[in-house]
Amino acid sequence: MINKKYVENYEMRFAGSLSPELDISEIIQLAGQNKKCGLLTIFGEEDNALIYFDKGKIIHSSCSDLKGIDALVEMLSWKDSRFMFEEGMTTDEVSIGCDCNSALLSAFQRYDERGRFEHVDSSPHAKEVKSMASLREQLEDFLQVEGITTVVVVGRDGFIIDSASTGSFNIDEVGAVVSTGMGSSESIGVDLAVGNMQQGMLEYDSGIVFMNALGEDAIFVLVARPNVNLGMVRLQIKRRIDGIKAAMR
Image 1 (spheres, rainbow, N blue to C red):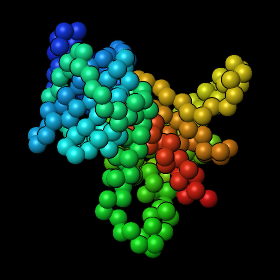
Image 2: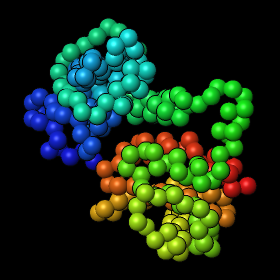
Image 3: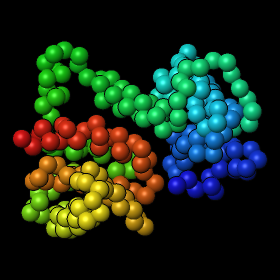
Image 4: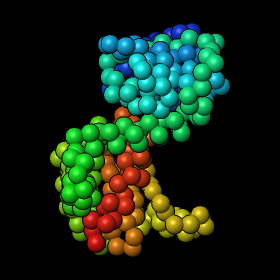
């Protein structure tokens, strides 16, 4: 949910400043949700980025010499910039042409890949070492995402298998709570005849909790701050969950 206080004169100008509470992806989602038609300009330190919308879909984006999804990837790292949306601005150039969520998902995926492999040796040996990361390394990787504070793998019996955290959680207490909560959530799926639980998300006043089943024996738990980018969290879980399962074998 976007806090409108960070957007100045939303209905008239749709202009404001990026902040930890309002990043570029949220501005793009806001334009999509409101079926905007026009041009979103983000004013960077060295260059400006342009995103054209048509009825909420992203038609074209550009930044320096980059276009399309590559341009969106570049924008994701911008933090302290201003933005402005101009209604009715159009372009004949089409470099994306899809809904905002699909475009952002592709951009976050490339952004994540660029961050993970930009400084990694490209030799076969380095790739092999990377693919064999331990469970602890897999979990600590999550903490590089802004807003994620704790990740835990819990056995169905409530015992902690491994964890990583930047906060002051009592990790041992997490196990029993999560084991019970996961069981209740899975029972809901059975009672409502909607199948097995794939992922659960619980929102609280001071944080958000994600839970994923890791087969029949374990549960993956992620705790994040309320202002975390939910799309990024879901993408990170989707991309890394198979690696966590492999590291547990």
